Length: 156
Image (cartoon, rainbow, N blue to C red; front, side, top):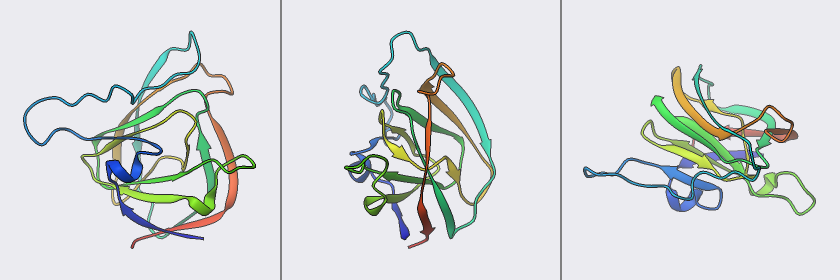
């Protein structure tokens, strides 16, 4: 299966979460619904990651979700980066036949909603740094990884 990259837009990404972008004019934008947690007593977690780039085309067989937490990626020193999302399949797991691949600009962050299937964090073009925000306590409910049929991400 081939997934061509499409530009990340708030409208196209809305079924999976929020696109985090600074306002064009001076001021502040609030993302009130962007952070979700379905477990009482689980603390918020902020981490910083430094990733090396992956070249396109790229092949993968992995998807993940956070069944009880949203997960936000906020660029700190970024270039283009990859987002692959899929709705839930009726029989469980991600529905890869309806998966979508987005390419984010360096000035765009995202929040995956609670329980959204997505590909592991991948950057393109150059090494990049991001802040990651989620709720976690080190238990198996923090992350779920599954193997899916091989797919390929390609430039449009």
